[in-house]
Length: 225
Figure 1 (spheres, rainbow, N blue to C red):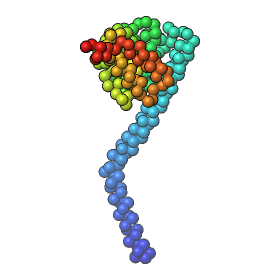
Figure 2: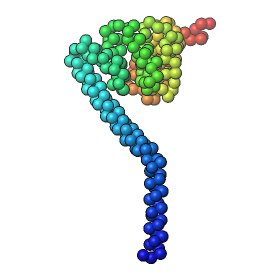
Figure 3: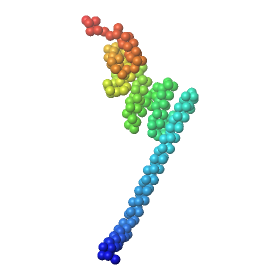
Figure 4: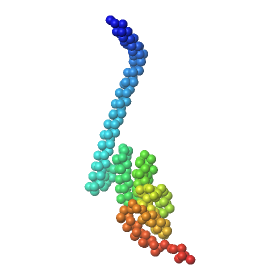
């Protein structure tokens, strides 16, 4: 045996002894850590599987309720949407809550529909765009009874130039202002709608007709002298 081989063998023996001592002292820790990692991975995989199956079940339940609604089985559809809404599972539960609110409004139960939309609007767990939609839907329910000032407070911020609901909000408040005889505010709101370059053809025509109705009603400064 050469001197180099001897040194190599001694070195390997020393390493084996060091590893044996380390394992003797920390072996249980290594085993525990390994088991912990395995259990954690298994738990994550199990949770992901449960989430996937729950989402699939919620999706099936939602589309089954939609099918009932399309088949004009309104009471059964409402019950199915209500059950899914209470499940609290993800996006389908939120969509179901919107369907329940819409069904209540359609059935003439304005108070319950308003409460449902206000609850959606105030739910911090829901995406802001959907909360804004709930605020607009709620405003439509009270548009014939609330004052323009009340509606403006309810819809505050949604009439900003970069908000996708700005035209709907301005139109709702314009109608309320017209109903109250505040033709100047109604004109201001509808003029803002008409000035929007992204306005749809139908909305543009509606705004033009509204403004034509308003023009004879607006008192000019010179007419008050």
